[in-house]
Amino acid sequence: MFDKRKNALKKCGKAAVAVVGTTVAGIGSAVAAIPAVVGTTLATVQTDGLGMIDLVWPVVVTIFGGILLITLFKRAGSKI
Image (cartoon, rainbow, N blue to C red):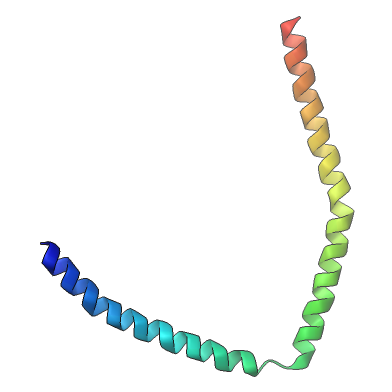
């Protein structure tokens, strides 16, 4: 039983290596065809995303801190 699985794995393994190899080769050639405008646009999107994160962090920290304080007050209140 184990030998059958081992042989099947060997057969499929060779095919999987061939598929991965051609996929990697295709990705390498696709990356070379990207225009420079795409890089500039992605840099702009990254800058905008970082700006949005800077705006959202204080809100997230405030909400998390409020939930934490409410939980602590509930625990302290239940002990009284």
